[in-house]
Length: 377
Image: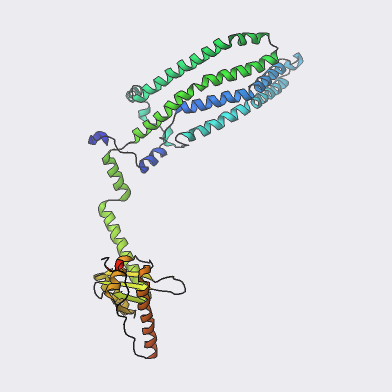
């Protein structure tokens, strides 16, 4: 898209783009961070277990070279001896193998996390395309890889040479030590030399990890047009969204009209606004608005109320205040408690007088409405 429209990739990747790239196995990875962690843990493990491993190998060789001549002529005995030797060697290296396996699985969590994707291992012609291959070699990423290789070579070679120069007398002196003492000494020397040589990779990993994050974010950047196209695909076309909004509005209106018959009172303007209230003294702290509307909707609310014998009370200031300050299924504001309580008391008195055949009570006059709720419309 960027090549077709001439637009630059200046926009950060959207959550959808990040999710799709992860499904394809495209996550930030630092081989240097993985290598550093693996080598540092391996050197630490060798410091802890190296002496025991070398001693076990020595015993294994000693036992293997002590086979009697008569046993060497028996094929069954030799096969059994070989099997025992292989099993013993596996037990010797098993702790180190488990340690390296664990660190290999945990290190990716530090950068990019785990990612399992069959798309990443699927065949793609561009992977064997020599032109694209040359492009990757002579790219910024290829230059960075070359610099990392040279840096690792010179750093590790330099540190190893210095360590060997400093420890040359100690290394030569190993030949004069008893075998079991020399093995323990070798384990310690190799572990520390390995640790010191590997530690220089920390510098490269600290430089490579931020670069890989930057490179990954750069590759996933999008053009403005791509962001617009994705938004259209995600949210739908404008005409579709408009149709959905209309349907949602119609459904909301139907639900609101269905609630009008259960209302206790309809407060009107009397023609411009209508607000339906319901109050259950046992279950509600205050009356709630079950329907409200202006003009045509207000007329429909009044028609439904008349059809179901819901009391309609004309109180323009209260109707305007309720319409402006409340939402559907919401309690009325505290400032309107007294005014609404007066209306509801009138409605209950009206129902009682109708049942008893008595004269209807007078409609409420001026109602106490706070100034801050009176002129909201």
